[in-house]
Length: 260
Image 1 (cartoon, rainbow, N blue to C red):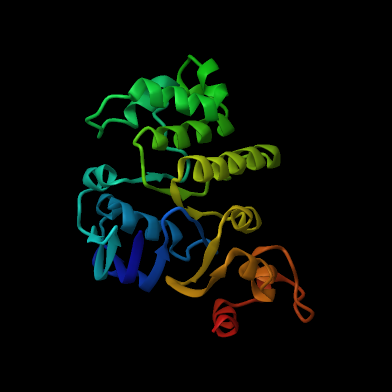
Image 2: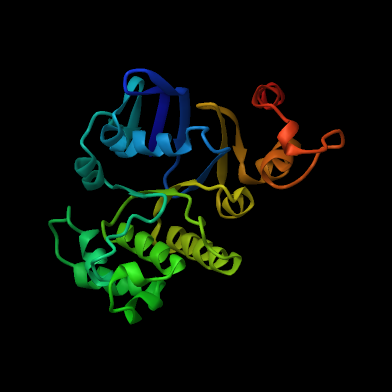
């Protein structure tokens, strides 16, 4: 469904962030993209959704293909119409609009009917949103994340790019949100590319995963393979190697040598 082939991304014509990154997302799958802060995970999602332009970034090499068609360089609203919707880090809901108005906003590229039916569908996954009639800015962090995912569903996406859905949520809410993510994938057949700091939770819902370091993919495999990989356990799942005393003492280039 989605193929990212050897792309490089440069910001302000100077800063090279992605250095020949490639990954693939098959239809119907949940794929996790793991890595430390600054590895280039969010930039990867923006390269796919066309949002690099808003930050003076661009793909300078390689290509992004969705359902066989090249989409790097396509305007973001046209990418949404093709079936890709990004749930941004930090929710990015419109705080001075109601939850219902935010949901309707998610359908702005659609030219078909059925918006009311889809709102009811979103409420079936997130019944709390139906009860919240005030401004979205007054919703809790968990409710705002639910609203952001619901707004994405209103676009009837084929692929959702999800950036840090657990950020700022309590452990109980993280479990709830990821349970709904799994349901949406299984019941609606929506494919997902998931960027998430909570690697353990991401791998629990994903079928495949990639690990990024310094703008490149350094390791990939099934979710089970990554969850059982000793290096992934040490650096991302809270495990510890026999000869490692602290994460702070590990240099990135040493990790890359171990990945490779």
